Structure formats: structure tokens, C-alpha cells
Image 1 (spheres, rainbow, N blue to C red):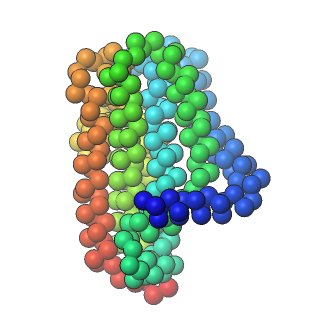
Image 2: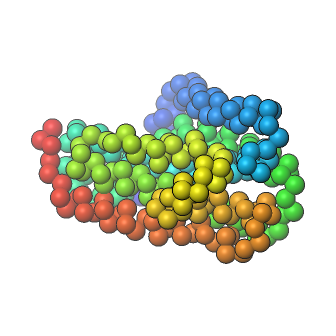
Length: 258
């Protein structure tokens, strides 16, 4: 952990060398994500609710998803750009070093400009907490924290899965963006509005609903099932097959010769 924090400190100092550029990039990330918020705002300026969910309830859901994705994209971005390591031949150097390849990929690319999106998510959450009308208890506060932790786990697993696929395709597969960037976009609404089939898929195949939908039902009072509080933690189980697939790809890896 000490070495990881050392890497994080070094990368932050490097990115802060050009402070004006760094700050403008953060502002740009904030403004790009702000368009998604405007889409939700204009939707509810026309309709009072969407599939039974009020504006503040949707913002509560959206803010947690965006926060989890922003943190993941900041600190796990090395797996998101993993195909570049394969094509450039940099992965060869990683594999011959004594440190674990997971650690090296994590520290190969940390993008602090994603804090622009994170800041927007925090602002939405600060607004949504009092505006939602939720009677907050310790259990509901814990559910929000578990939603964030579970979201980071699931998004991290998806990035690892994406990196594992890259061993066999060399080029990154764009369809994986449906589950990473796409999840950030359609995750701004509770998944039930897309239909029962979509909800089942994102419950049992890609477990986004476990941290995005079911805990939200408990928080806003649409369900009194206390097990929904802990469902986001099942996202850590999803990491296991994604990690094993990545390790399988490492064993089958052949250098591109770059």
C-alpha cells in the first residue's frame, strides 16, 4: 500500500505540472457530465415522474452510479486502456518485472481529471439527500455507502474483464463500452424502467442492478426488504470470474513484437 500511495503521489505531481491545463480538463469533465444531468432535469420538467420515480429519487440513483464510475475510472483506468499496453509492447516489460502485473497496470494510468465528474456526483447527492424526502436511518445511510462500494467493485471488474478480452483481440472491443460507459449513462435511471428482461440481465449476468436498483428501492421506501442493503456487496463476487479470466489471458499471452 505504501508503494501504491507513492505511485499515486508521483502521478498527481506529474499531472499538476501544467496546473492550468489540469484544472481546465477537470472543468471539461464536469461540463461533459453536466449534459447528462440536464437531460434528466429537462425530462422531469416535462413529466412529474418516470415509471413511479420522482426527480430527487432518480438523482439519488444517478449520483451514486456516477460517483462509483468516476472513482473507478480514475484509479482503475489502467485496465480501461489495457489494449495500448499490448499493442505497444509495454506489457512485455510489465510481465518481466518482479511486481504483480495487476499492481503495475493499476499504477500505469491514474487519471485525476475524472474528479470533475466526481464533483458533479457529490453535488447531486448533496441535493438529492434532503430533497428525496427519505427519513434517513443508519440502515439507509449504510445502503448508500454499500451502493458506492459495490458500484466501484462491479465497474472495476468490468474493466478487468475488458482487459482480459484484449489478450485475444489485441484491439479493445467497443461493445464493452455498453457495460462501462453505457452503464454510467443508462444507470442514471432505475433499471426497472427499461423492462423486466433488462433488469434480469443486469441482476444475474452483469450485476449492476445489485448496487443501482435494489438498494434504492429500500432507501426510498418502495421495499422494506432489509437484505437489499447488502446486495451491493455481492458485486465483489463478480470480480472473481473477471480476475480469473484476466489471469487466463496472461497465461495465453503472446507478445505482439512491438
